[in-house]
Amino acid sequence: MPRKPKQQRRVRPVPPGDAIKARIVDMVRVDHAGETAAVAIYQAQQRVFGALPHKRAITRTLADMEAGEHVHLNAFNEELRKRRARPTALIGMWQPLSFALGAGTALLGEKCAHACTEAVEDVIEEHYQGQIDELEAAEIEPELRAMCQQFRADELEHRDTAIEEGAHEAPAYPLLTGLIKVGCRAAITLSEKI
Image (tube, rainbow, N blue to C red):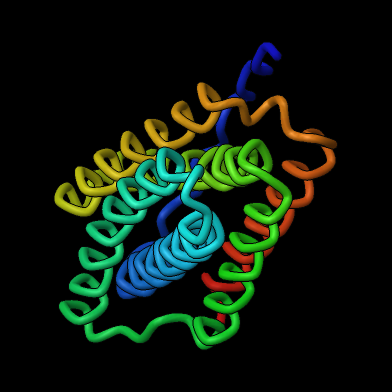
C-alpha cells in the first residue's frame, strides 16, 4: 500500500524566557511517557509470542526493538533527573494500557503486532520531527535535538521493519492502525499537560 505524502508541518513557536524551560520539560515528559509505553508494548508482545516455540523469530525481533526503546527510556529518565522534572502523572495508566495494547495485538497475530508497531512508530516519528523542528527554529537545546534526531531514526527503522514483516496484511489494517494512532496522539497531548 503506497504511503500518503506528508503534509507540511507547522512549527510550534517556542515561548520566550522561563517559559522555554517549561516547554522543554513538557517535551521531555511526553517523550519519557512514549518510550515507557513502547517498552511495555514490546514486552507484552514478547510475552505472548515467547510462549510459542514456533514464534522465536518475531520474539527476537521484538526483543531487539525493546532493547532500543530501553536506550531511549534511559536517556529520558536522565533528562528528567537532570532537569529536576517529574514524569507525567498518567505514567501509571500508560504502562498497563500499553501492555494491554501489545498483548491484544499479539493475540490477534504477527501481522497485527507489526501493524501496531507501524502505527505507534509512525506517530512517534512525526512527534519527534515536530520537536526537532521546534528546537531548530528556536536555535536551542542542540543536545536534546540531536538525541531526538537519533531516536526518530531508530523509530523509523522499527516502523520499516514492521512494514517489511507484513503490517499492511493485518486484518482490518486501516481500522486497527487508525485507532492506535488516535490513542497515541491523545496520550501525547495528555502527557504534555498532566
